Amino acid sequence: MAPAPEQGISGLAIAGLILAFLMAPVGLVLSVIALFQTGKGRKGGRGLAVAGVIVSVLAMAISAAAVVFALATVGKNVATVADPGCTAGKDVIINSASMASDPASVKTELKKAVDGLTAASAKARHDDVRDAMMALANDYNELLQAINTGNPPPAGLEQKLQSDANRIDELCTLGGATK
Image 1 (cartoon, rainbow, N blue to C red):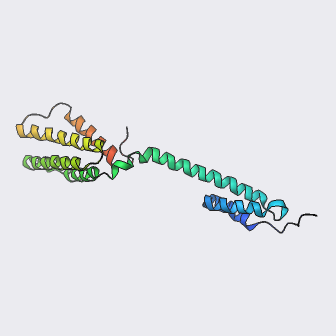
Image 2: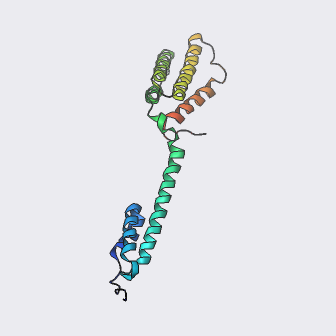
Image 3: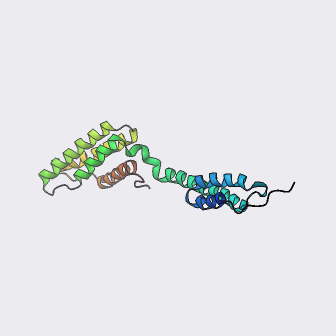
């Protein structure tokens, strides 16, 4: 018995190929259905259906690789960004960024920053966030002590402040300052 003559190109094969570029999972499903629909010469468009399957699988593989890459690079600190210590500590840092220029106000603001960072450290759920908040609080405290005694700040304090602030940025900001 001769196979039935082709009845035109399968609309599912065409739709599957188009959707393979736009919405790969939907394109894959339609292309697979079109493969069965075009089998044994029932309808034309088998090549379109095969192309739809291939393009869909490639598009999904590329998307999965992009997600893995994004999680590996940008998302490595996702767990610490939402840490209560990070949230509280960043608020303290932002609020202390505009310290006044007169010595009395600077002392008051530094003391508030030390207290705020110490409190943020106590709220932290991750040890590295807790340690980073305490390190910056200790740096600010050293600066405060230098101001109170009238002595110059310890050598290297400026670099230590910058380093400890960068560590907080790494932990508490998505894609933070990575070195």
